[in-house]
Length: 313
Image (cartoon, rainbow, N blue to C red; front, top):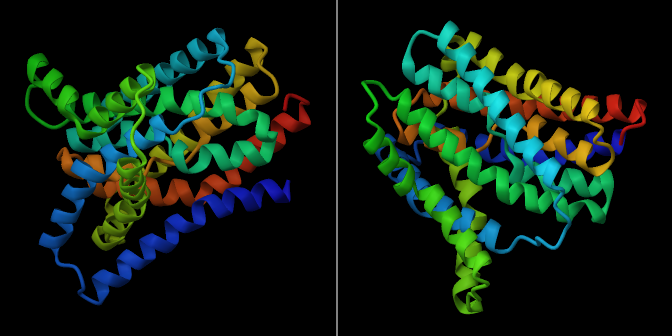
């Protein structure tokens, strides 16, 4: 149990260190608001697409995909998304906060948390299924995020305009390029793949740095209720529903353990960048990211302990 806790802490601790670095850069006035805006644009338009492409292109998909499990995970994602949407529409007044809250409640940081937690928890044999599901779920996260943030951007959404936004979203374009490269077995020369991997590796630290420099603690008070709801939804309610359903469906071992990661990981780093780029409540998105990351070490270990006690993993 202690080992699992330490692995979870090690997975989220770098998040806080880079955020603190960003806060320090702001206090030292090394980054102006205009510079932060430009860097955030570069992260969203360039770095994240490269990250999406590289993560999918380099994924080892040799594991066995269970069709019923695939359908279950996708279906449960839509259930959690639908419940989050209904709750946000009924309880939150302003549209930008609705979009940010919905995104925080369903979209997890699988790239950072998925592989290390599963490798420690279930061993090397878990990495095949984990990689396949990450390659499926992460692009789906982004598609739902674009739709959500566009709908709750303010004003009346137009289907044609929304479709254009989805098809031209940098993250979705990056994911589509990766999927096509894998599907057609395209070999990217190493001379091109290496800089792609370097840019991909820089995406998350750059996004966290910008978020830290842009984050003000006064926004926690202003968005406190929605932050609590977003964090509770992401770490407790969503995984509770998915894990209970998975357990009753008969999933055990690696598939059940993977549900803890898919539905119980903290908010995705890119959720803040997308919220800022698409006129959503970026401060709410940042608060949910920071506090879900802070508490996820405890909640993930709690879910692991519960289902180990039940003999399910």
